[in-house]
Length: 174
Image (cartoon, rainbow, N blue to C red; front, side):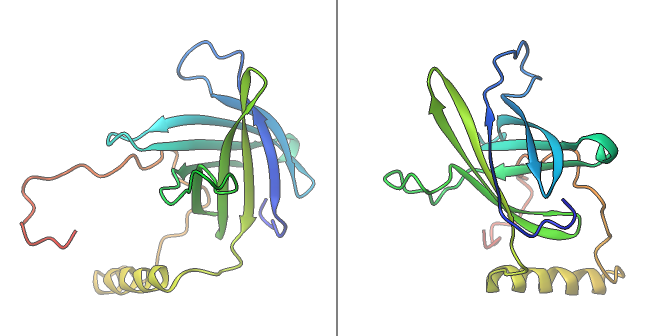
């Protein structure tokens, strides 16, 4: 995964052995870049009731200690008439590289499958994201933090939304 250069596309079947809410909704094994991974995904919602997917990939064999945990957010721009638009989509950093993640929940017989694509973004980011990164970098430099801290694995829990603080001033622009 560290040197993923090609697009991955795969499918995870619905977990028909699920006994509790803690068990994943989709499970399977996938192969990316000649490495095998165990995959598990949960359909979750934020406190604001926005659906997202939690995806966990665990390396097999010698790479067993490699774990990837990411959130794939609901695609709010999805057009219902276009089945190629993913239900979930996000850009996540893994191993210091940005990846585009897309997911579709599709019916297969009496069950569902999670169709998944993972591909490197090749460093292409929007002008808005580049401007935000610059503002954040400038803020951190002014705060005495010269650069972002390097993180080898993503945080173990996904961000579940922002809680509203009633003490915020009324002139907040968002």
